[in-house]
Image 1 (cartoon, rainbow, N blue to C red):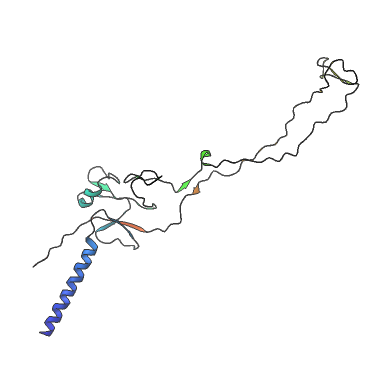
Image 2 (cartoon, one colour; image 1 turned 180 degrees about the vertical axis):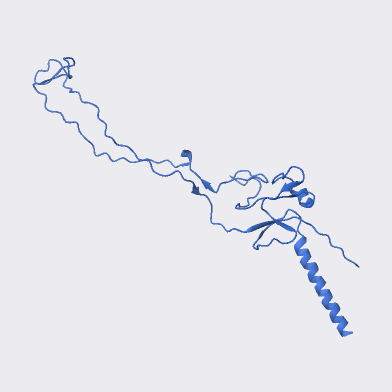
Length: 209
């Protein structure tokens, strides 16, 4: 009699553990997404890897998410969410933030700055200065080479010609060198990779009184 009671108690304990484990595994509705640290996806769940799955076999999930994350083959399959290399962001528009729609993908892993995105700045140039040398023209007549026009006379009596000897324009040769390689810069915060899994099945339990 004692042995029978012990066996019955053990059976009840085992059944209780099984039911508790089953409820903890299956009480979440299809469409729930969780972070999972393991390597083997639990029963009733699939990886959020964007794969196309059967609309008939996973009809409970299909009723929840439909083709929000991809239409599959347009007839018999639909796509799971794909969180590989992506972070999750809440749907909607937070204060001063951009409105985000369900299933919308956005953002870039690397980004090349455009001119409009660069802060205003200046480039300094160090020019030591220079001069155009010219001898004292007093008592001399200057004219253009090969002709007798545009004469200029300097000295005590310049006959009404202004004391304004001509000089030619001269370039300094100063230029600013370009720098940078226009490569994309890293646009990611410190992160840790982990599996995201989605609930796909719902089981029913039957109790015998």
